[in-house]
Amino acid sequence: MFLDVESFRRVREKGCTRRVPNSQTYKLRFYNILRRGCKTVAFVILALTASCRRAAPISNEVSDDEYALYAAWINRHFKEQPQRLLLQDQTFIFDPLGQNGCVQNPREKLDRTAVAMLQQYRLLGSAIYAVLTGHFQRPESRVKWRYEESRGFPTEDQARPYSLIAFSRAVFDSSHTRAFFAVSDSCGGLCGYGGLVSAHREHGKWIFDSFPPCAWIS
Image 1 (cartoon, rainbow, N blue to C red):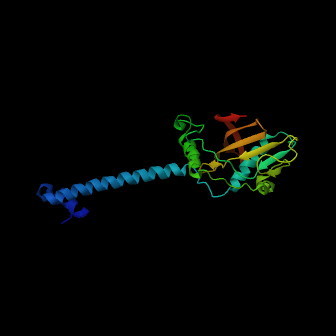
Image 2 (image 1 turned 180 degrees about the vertical axis):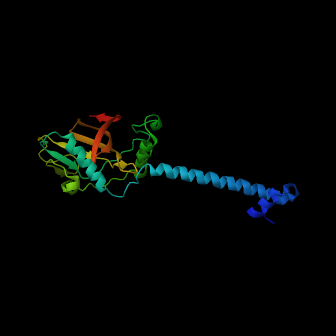
């Protein structure tokens, strides 16, 4: 007969564990092992949950916060109206923690929240998302420069200088006051540069910082 928790407690308090038959002793040992195992699993789940809470989940489409972040970067990046500003109509794939990623040994360079944020890119895989450039006309995510929507490099009027801007998805912390995203600024052929951008919000405005280990020039 298997002893329940209350019965085992009474037996232990009376100091009578030696009187328990061998078969039930094994059952009690199994119960203790099982209980410790359950506690360990619960601890791991709580730890993973706490880690996930450091980073906001990524939505299935580019969010309003992402459009506002992209627009703030564009407005800051260009000091005057570009001769021809093209905005890519889809995101590009980016995984800084992948096998060929630009962030190796992230825990040596980044805090836990930043690592949890960058790990969100692993969930996206090779997915590409539409960038609805009409959002850049909205008050909360307005781009102040004239722009055209583009799918890749222009096929017409190629002799005219241009700047083609493309973004990866953006990842945020749980409070949406920190963000990471990658950007590419191409001007045709081997002309262009890009990299990972770190951003934080101050007094309602996004402040941007480059991340040197994740920068490229062509």
